[in-house]
Length: 186
Image (tube, rainbow, N blue to C red):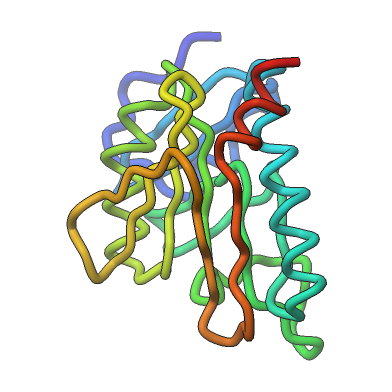
């Protein structure tokens, strides 16, 4: 299916009108980003990071881990679908809708078709929206790039990653060598 070319400024509502065709549609500052269905390697990486985060969240009693597909709506001009994210979940809130202001972490697994969006548009978006941490999992480099709103620099990690939300007593400590070996060296 060819993408409409006359539309210059996309909204979340415009995106919602697109067909459910297996592609991922996201809108960042009025620009439509379209990516194909992820590869098996991508899904293995996202699935394992989700499992590690979900277990940590249960143990630490902080937030809840979510795996795509799930929309995160910041505004009518900003709706994204991170591969994995962690958000605060209050019993009194509606769990059917993601309140972007409750995000603790967003994670994207890098692929050639998403590199520009992940490294530029989404990194900017998450910083501007005040999401405490954003990780890009680079399978080829076997690294995780960590970004925060407070620091414009990107921290590139290859051995160990520690993450501790403000309400958690102990950090999550990920052995990245082990993580990448489990995903890539099967």
